Image (tube, rainbow, N blue to C red; front, side, top):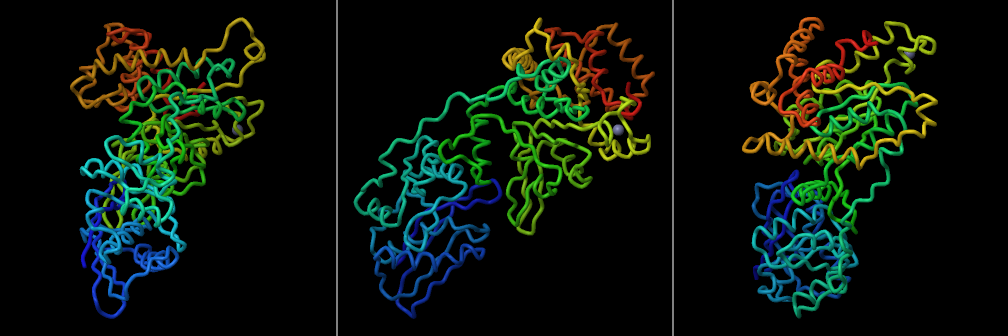
Length: 510
Ligand SMILES: [Zn+2]
């Protein structure tokens, strides 16, 4: 007898519907599996047969053939155990074949017949819903993930026996009778910019960076609070739209990083890989690559603390995502293109000891400082629109009671005003933020007052700007003008934008 059931394979970040076919016939007892399978999938036969025994399911002695179609899609993981088991049972007439119509199944089997949780349930359910499938059988522990998708009935099964009871008699398993915990609607923000006294100029740079989605570099001595400031940047990012939330949740589901109780990511990602992280960890690695930090930071912030400590190879790999907002990974199994649209936030000390330019405390020689700063390549710095110096705060700032520190809420209000301006400005174009304005369209979107033009010309000649720097100044000034609600970019906006440029050599600063 022949039987089939729908399942789904994860291929990079894509989900491909897979038909699991089983044929049970007379012949020598054998279990043959075909269909571009890796070793984990092939081991499925042992798990399935043992699970049958331990679930008191007696199969007639027979020759079992399994095919996972289409045959040109590589299949990996243990997610096909459950559909293979169900297809075999239907082909052995132990459950009606009609019960598998319009059903998708994914899940790993234990030897004792229980169904274990797997990664990638959310995107698989989305795919099932798109394919017009009526029901999806998933591991009970992944049920809330599957339930996040509307328009399809998700059934959480904890064991093969439960799956059978459902398919034979429609008995709902215990997990499916319970309600899933409601999604948290408000992200708990445990940190706030108001915790930080002083540093108002860094907060200003943060507002500009987030408003125009400009990359930001913080330079300062140890203890100046660079990391504290960086951690608070996500608190001023706009809330995720539902579409963005599903897009990010899908990535986290495949990476196995979703919280089983809150399967939908509701706050913007903040990824902070350590400087010893390998390039593979940053961009994504594996035979079929799992998403790396650049993809996990998609629509959020990628924070690189101690920037010069990262290896040159690692920093080089960031160039493509910073330019294209995607990352392309080539493997023998194919070429994978993952989203990687993040705000780059970096922090570094000005010198190896960290106290330059305070010559009373800095003990580094000029060449040591130079070598340290040169570890960050020019092409990377070229992609950072804003550089800001964090100074250690003075005693007066620390104890000052006269002025309340600016809070995340105040900053968010400014940011969202600019985002609204950008939305109107870029309507009908693929652009979303000022930092994305391509050189060819700079003149169209960045119109200067005559004074501002003079000032920029002056700076261009005196500072020996590169064309890239010139464009960076204009894009940053566009955002600063938007913050003031000005259509035209004025002289002050240009001056402030110049102030945030990375000097050709940091050494010459101050
Ligand atoms: Zn030093």
